[in-house]
Length: 338
View 1 (tube, rainbow, N blue to C red):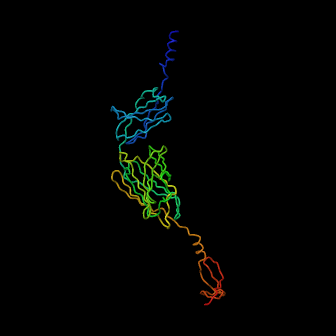
View 2 (view 1 turned 180 degrees about the vertical axis):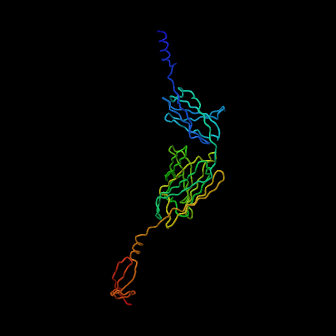
């Protein structure tokens, strides 16, 4: 018994016996579409990070999904084929060295759905915060597509009135923010001026929280109105999973100096060659009267009468009563030769 105890102590002291790294369990796959699926699991008790691999069932090669920290219990499996059965497994690592690990779990399997394309029907909506003529205002452009629509390859968005106030801008200025939300992503970025050419042309980058460039677009002042041009990166599958995105400019747009609607038009092209045009004239600009105009309206002359109340034309050297439309009466004597 003494020799056995000493032997166990020796194994423990030399590290030959190590603590067990338990794996995640309760694997299940949800949100299965024709192109992706969500892997879910119950957290392991001492996890530092996880690794997932997946493959088409019956094939030899696995694809890996890394950078999964211990706080996560789900991960999107991307770039799948429709009507195809896949399997996936998970491995738990109990420290940063990747040495203590659980080994691979059992497989969970799932089959992707059939792809049913939708008609190309994107929407682009302009919104402004101030409807007063000749005023700087916050200005937003909201774009939206439904699941399985062809991806947008490019769009040109312009107005027939208003302009971008670029005179005081310098490279590096922050001009607003943007956000993008889809079933698998939620991205926020700031709008940063890359460069401008004179007062009427500028390139704006969308920068994420770690300084990466998520995309860019061009803004321009035209002879009448503004133009915004965007190019969508091709993701290789030609169809969208559905999203809503919003670009917000901070007081960069200047309303026209005349009353009436601003007409915004968008020409939108898909990666499959579809073309659609949208026109929006729902934004109405108003020009409140100035103080001078208000006084003129308030004192608009109605008629002139003499002291007996008889209506009369202007007459010199005679006391007359000037009656205005608001009921104000003013007594005047115009002195001088007739």
